[in-house]
Image 1 (tube, helix red, strand yellow):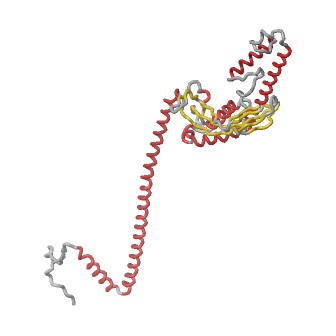
Image 2 (image 1 turned 180 degrees about the horizontal axis):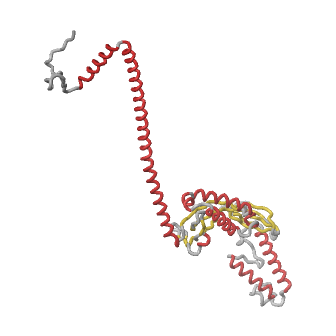
Length: 365
């Protein structure tokens, strides 16, 4: 049965909720004025109305409204992705799941907590206009983003921390202000990590910084009972402050020049040193070969001289003539001109051309 089919206490069907409310207010006014009948019949029965009867009807209406309100407030709906934390006399009693649920009216209260919503905290900037081309506001947020690295460089680190609610009871009652706790823990952990690293290392190892910060933040939040689970940590920007950027750029240029010179020196070293080592090894091997050759030659000459000496001792005249003939035989092919000197004559004898092909062969007896 809908509200259009129901009869009101004054016996008239309302055509709309507004008319029902207007009729109720009119009945309430008539009850306080001591009249329980419509104004059209008030003139005929003006002296027969009872004030107690009007008050009784008013009390009945109030009680009916109160009962309806109690019944209506006994049911509540939890949307998908939410949970309901039920408090009984201010103390946690249970946690309800999505759907239609019942609670004891005037005894239990319900706090709805969205478990799927991704909450975030921004450091060093604030999102002023989200969208496809998001706009950020970075002024007056330097205090939370300026940090000192291990090599005494001032760095402006801007990052985002995202998290979800993991334990709704702890989120509501363990820590008074969980978002502020997340901000404090995040800033503390990030400052400690950056303070233990050099600036160049931070620039080249963002993944390590993010992973370390996430683990330490989650551990700290679990220890204080915040009831949240860390999600993504994004390093938006890592730069030196604007006031020191020119000096920092000069240092970077000098560092790059130094690395370039070191690389060139290493290239020259790698090119010349192996070549010099190869040349030195070649010279050493040639010297060793020459030494071995000279030693072998000397040993051979010694052995030859010893053999000749033994033969000479046995037959001196024959050995001497043989040595003379062998020497002449080895020497004459290399001689271009031959001059024979006669001690008895005063001049040089005519040339004997031993290389001429017309000379007859000399025969020996």
